Length: 96
Image (tube, rainbow, N blue to C red; front, side, top):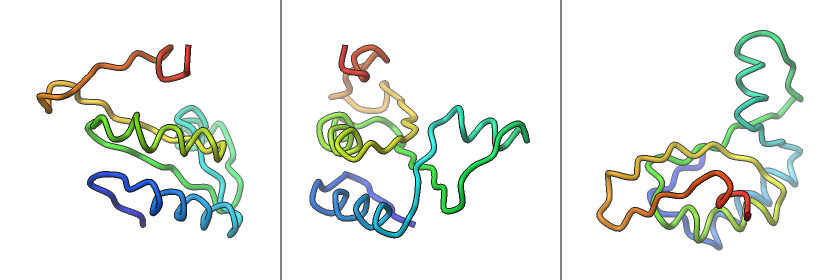
């Protein structure tokens, strides 16, 4: 298990590289939900990456690294938890 309070770019990059090198695949929310419902299969060594609370650090550090690696993740955003929170819409998160 990898656990972060704030994502450090170098450490997170190394962790994603470890997952890729060792044959792990990241699942998106839809794939994981289908698996839980019994309507879809997942590859061996599938993992779900989750990020809680949505600190700015996720969008500024983790998100670009995820994109660079073609990795998927679930972000549970709670914009009211932090004074510096900035709400991100899905089109903005997708780079539109």
